[in-house]
Image (cartoon, rainbow, N blue to C red):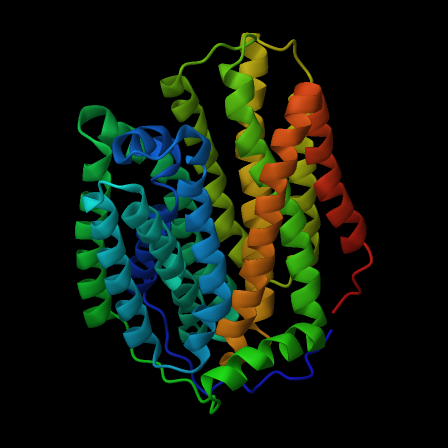
Length: 401
C-alpha cells in the first residue's frame, strides 16, 4: 500500500551511533515511567492529601487523560518546531509537574499536577519519531526497536520501583527523585541530541486540522492503529485483572509477590530489537501475525493447569512474558511502518497512532474489570483471547506490499 500524502525523505539521514540510540532509549524509559509511578501508590497518596476513597481513581485517570490530550495536541508540534528544543522544553515542564505533585498536600494541586504529568510526558512520543528521522532507512526498524525497548522497560519497571521507594520512605520521595532524574535527562539531551528543523510550513491550527486528513488518507496508519488498539486492549485487560486473580483465594499472593510477578513482563521487552530487525528485512507481515497470535496464546496457556497450583502460577508468568513480547513486537513493526509514510508527517502520524493505541488500552482495562466481576478469570481471559483474534482476522486481509 502506498501513501497519498507522504512527503519525501531527506536525501541524507544522520547516522545514529549506538551511544545516541542508548541515550534516547534511556530517556524514553525514564520519562514514560512518570505515567505509572502513582498507580501502586494511589491509596497512600489519597489518604495523605485527603482525597475520598471513592475518588482515588482520579489520580491515575487524570494522568491518562493528560497523556491522551498531549498525544493529539502537543506531539504534532514535532512536525512544526525544532525537535531538540521542543523535547527539552517538555521535559522541563515534566520536572515542574513532578515537583508540584511531590509538594502537594491537598487534592486540587495534586490532581492538577497529575494531569500535567500526563500531558508533558508525551515527550517520549517526540523522541521516537526523532530517532526514526535520524536513522538511515535501512536501519530504521532496528533503531526504533532499540529506542522502544527503553520505553517498554520504563513502563514495566515504574510500578515496582515506586513501590520499593515508598516502602522505605514515602510517596513524596518518588516524585522528588523523578524530578531530579528529569533535570539530568533534560540537560543531557540538550547537549547530545542533534537539531532537527521540520520543513512543514503550517500554523498550529492548520497542523491540527491536517490530522483528520492524514488519518483518512493513510490506510497503513488506520490498519496498524487497529491492530495495536486491539492488542493493547488485551494487554491492559491482562494487567488489570491478573493482580486481582493473584491476590484472590486461589493464589493468595501478597502485594510484594504481585510486584515480583509484574517484573516478569520486563522480559517481553526483548521483542523490540528483534522486531526492528525483522522489519528491516521485509518480514513485517509474518512478524505481525506472530505477535498477534502470541497475545492470544498467552491467555490460552493459563488454562492448562489447576488454578492456584505452582504450575498455574508458572504458566501465568509465562503468559505475561509472551503477551508483552507479542504486543511489543507488533508495536515496533507498526511504528516502523508509519514512520515510512513521510519524514514531515511523523509526529502527527505517531500522535494519531498512539492516541488510538491509548483508547484501546483504556477500554481494555474497563472491560477487563467488568468481565472479571461477572465471570472471573474464565470470562476475562475469553475476552482477552477474542481481542487479538479479531486483529488477526483483520490482518489476514492485508495485501502484500
